[in-house]
Amino acid sequence: MSEFSLNIVDDSADIKFDLTKNMINPNAKGGTELLLEELYSHLPADLWKEFNIMQSRVRDEFFDDRPTLLWLHDLPGDPESEHLKDSKLRERFEKIVFVSHWQQDKYARYLGIPYEEGIVLKNAINEIPVHEKPKDGKIKLIYFSTPHRGLHILESAIRVLSQQRDDFEVDVISSFKLYGNEEADSQFQVLFDRLDQLECVNYYKSLPNNQIRERLKTSHILAYPSVYEETSCRVLLESMAAGCLAVVPNYGALTETGTDYAWMYNWESDPARHAQKFANILSHAIDAFWNPGVQDILKMQTSYYNNFYSWNMRKYEWMDFMESLLKDKK
Image 1 (tube, rainbow, N blue to C red):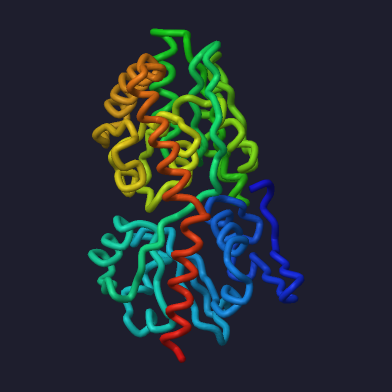
Image 2 (image 1 turned 135 degrees about the horizontal axis):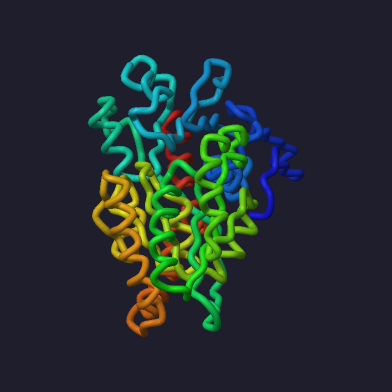
């Protein structure tokens, strides 16, 4: 994925789809928006033009005369999901698409959405080519997510770790800019300033997805002490497809997304304890990264995520799903 585009054109079918049609914020270019662009780029135009796909945020003006699929990325406690408690309002949707089994279970328990009204189609990514990690120099850690998802835990952990060892550095790519809400960064300015004080940290406000994917090729460890209940996790998917050793907590759908490959630790609600625990496991991960056993597992991990979470596989699940809906309506 090079850049986010506002429309997709299929000259052969003379179809143009405006990706901003159902967006609350047309300027947003985050993971959810990338997923929509990627989905349409992998589906046959004569299939996706038959459906109106809505992502999480629902507005009356978003509906048209086509069957509507609600593709949920949010948590059931989000105010934007409250309307799904009403079975009559759910009838507006041909099907509700969840991005993980964990998410579907939460919506069923919290909002009472019957399982038969939904389907799980897990998120997907474009494959990351096989590459060799740099062996000379320091171990490179990377964090690329919004500041509110655990950056304060990372900063505290790195501050402790930097006093114990100097054989690592950290790329931090974190801002609300990709979501068209850069002004929200101001509340985290003190945190950004603290990161700038650390010599081992390279702080980048925002980078496009294609540049992040290139950085993943030279990164060794994903350092993601999430304090946010992910419903899936594109950060984790791309990092693991790139052969990074992922250090994450067993929180939200990270357990489902990271399976048995991630270095998963028990989540802590207390920030100080969380940071200390995270610093300890990061130190072990740095020590262990080049261990032959770890490298063997990372090779299996890379193959797994580049296959089972690739659009080359997921597109067929979407196609089968959409074609079955069309057959049912005939």
